[in-house]
Amino acid sequence: MTEKNERGGIGKALKKYLITGVLVWLPIVVTVWVLTYIINASDQLINLLPSRWRPEYYTGFKIPGLGVIVAVVVLFITGLFAANMLGRKILEGWDSLLGRIPVVKSIYSSVKKVSESLLSDSGRSFKTPVLVPFPQPNIWTIAFVSGSIPGVVQQSLSEEYISVYVPTTPNPTGGYYIMVRKSDIRELDMSVDDALKYVISLGMVMPDELPLKKNKTVPVLENNIFHNADENKDQQSAVTAEETKE
Image 1 (cartoon, rainbow, N blue to C red):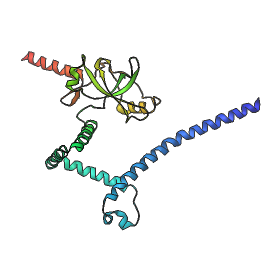
Image 2 (cartoon, rainbow, N blue to C red; image 1 turned 135 degrees about the vertical axis):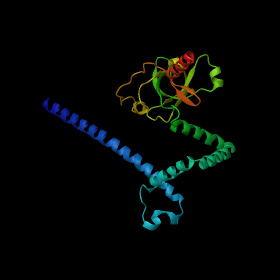
Image 3 (cartoon, rainbow, N blue to C red; image 1 turned 120 degrees about the vertical axis):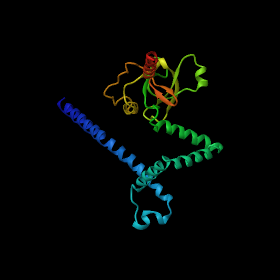
């Protein structure tokens, strides 16, 4: 019995240390792999230059990571150019030109609207984590408010609905676009990063807290900008008070 206990103890210790080693190295390996992939993909941009313009033509060897620097510089110059009046006029003409090409029109306009919605600071699209009953009542999942519902669709619904995106796990880039009744949505007082970590980790990486906001209100879309319903009520009350004083 003593020998069996010793063997069992040694086996458990080996298993414990092996798992600990995996937990230490796995994030490091995955991080290095992702960074290597990004650097290698960015370095392919150098191949678009003529051979005499490439750095390896003068140095005799490739410089890893140079594509990342080139990509950052190109993006910065593009943003600087698009921020002034002349750049905006040229981009408007470019958008108009691509908008006349049948197949390119659908792809270009869709990608542009999605990127503007995700990266723009003017709205709150995909910046509001919520709980929604999915795929059936009494089963809850984390989702993100994605935008407003078209008026034609809203008119066909008896109540007010909000469009949300339900990410899948562990790959949040795939998911479901659904329309949920506003009264069934519960807004979470947590950041988008915490919500994504919680989804990607299969619920194993817990945020510090997962409380519901006391007001339980969901932002509404007005003039392509999300506003909190309670903020709108406060603004309306202030306007009414000013009118009463006058």
